Length: 85
Image 1: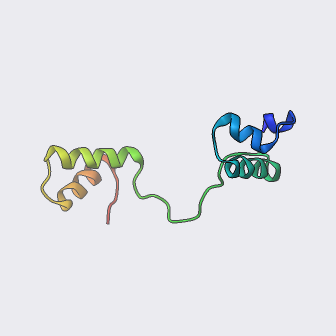
Image 2: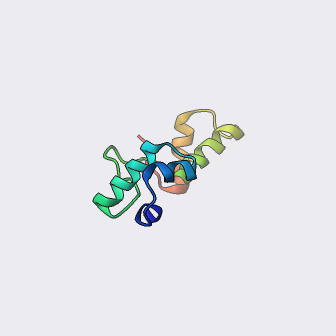
Image 3: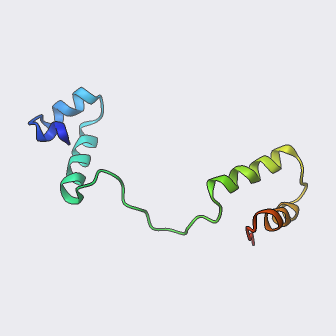
C-alpha cells in the first residue's frame, strides 16, 4: 500500500513484487475499506484441539504407545484435562 500511496500503479507494484495484478488490487481495496491488510476471522466451528494437542496426539500414535482411540482419549483426559467425545 505504501507503493500505491507513493504513486505507483497497481500494475507496476505487481510487476515489481512478482505477484498477480489481481492480488495487489485486492489488497489495496481491502486496505482502503478496512485500514488493514489481514483477513477477517472466518466463521465456523471452533477447533477442538490446539496445534500443540494435535502434535501430541500424532506423537502418541506414531510412537505406538497406545493401541486404541479410547486409550488415547483416556490419556488426554488424565494428563492434559482435554475432553474428547
